[in-house]
Length: 350
Ligand SMILES: NC(=O)c1ccc[n+]([C@@H]2O[C@H](COP(=O)([O-])OP(=O)(O)OC[C@H]3O[C@@H](n4cnc5c(N)ncnc54)[C@H](O)[C@@H]3O)[C@@H](O)[C@H]2O)c1
Image (cartoon, rainbow, N blue to C red):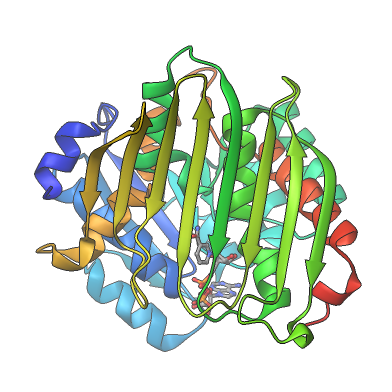
C-alpha cells in the first residue's frame, strides 16, 4: 500500500474552506518526526494551509523547523507569539511543564489548539483545564494520535454495532527508562482502551521492577473493566528489547488483531487481521520502511495525519468534537495513575 492507496482506504476529512495559518511551538523530536511529515502530506494535497510561525528555545531545532517551512517566521518567545496575530491556530509539541503555563493564555485569547499529550502529569490540574475549556467552549484537541490511526479506524468500522466481549493490549518498548515510560508512554495504551470501551475502572494491577532478572521485566499487567462488563487486559513493558504494540478486540464471532509492526528501530508499519472460524484474513500489512517516503507513511499509519486533518478541518465548526479532549486526557491520566499506584512502588522508582 503506498501513500495514495492508504489515503483512498482511509480518506481524510474535507479540507478547510478558508486558508489556515498554523503556528508551531516546540520543534523537537515529535514535531519533526511525526507532525511535520503530516503537515507535508496535507500541503502536498493542496490544503489551504501555511505554517506561518515556528517557535523553539533551541537554535538548532528552530533552524531545522525554519528549513522545513521556509516562509514561517522564527520565534523564541512563545508568549509574544501567542499574543501576536501571526497564526489562526497552534500546534504545541512541548512538555507538560511548558504547556501548563501557556494554556491559560490560549483560553484567554480563544486560540484553537492541537496539543501533544499528556498536557499535565497532575490529574487535578488536567481536570481544571478540561472544565475551563468546556466553560469557554475552547477548541483543544489532545494529540492521542492512536485514536486516528488507520488500525483504530479500520477496527471500529469493521466492528460496527457488533459488541465487544473482551480486549487485550500489549504495549512493549525496546529500551525505555521505566519511570518515564509509565508516565509518558503507557498513557497511549490506556487512552486507546478508553476509546474503544468507554470509561474504565481498574480491577487489579500488578507490576515488577527490573530486579527480578527476567528479560520481560520491568512490567505492569492490569485488568480494566468497561461499564458494559467487558474486561480489557493491559500488558505494558518499557524495556523488552523490541517494540511490540498489539491490540486485540474480541467480538462474538470474530477477533480483530491490529498491530504496529514489531521491527526493532522502526515502528512505522502496521497490520490488521480478522480472525474468524479458524481463518485469518489479513486486511492490510504495511511496512513503512519500504515506502518511498517512510516518515509520511509512518505519520499516516500512526494517525498523525488524520489527527491534524481532523483538527484543521473541524476547529471552526460549532460543536467541534476533538475526539481526544482535555477531559479524555484527564480520564487517561487518572486511570494511569491508579494503575501505577496499584501495580506497586517497585515499578515507579526506576
Ligand atoms: N504522540 C506521541 O506519540 C508522542 C511521542 C513522543 C513525544 N510526545 C510528546 O511530545 C512532547 C514533546 O516531546 P519531544 O520528544 O518532541 O521533546 P523534544 O525535547 O525533542 O522537543 C521539545 C522542544 O520544545 C522546546 N521548548 C521547550 N520549552 C519551550 C518554550 N518555552 N518555547 C518554545 N520551545 C520550547 C525544546 O527546546 C525542544 O526543542 C512531550 O510531551 C511528549 O510526551 C508524544
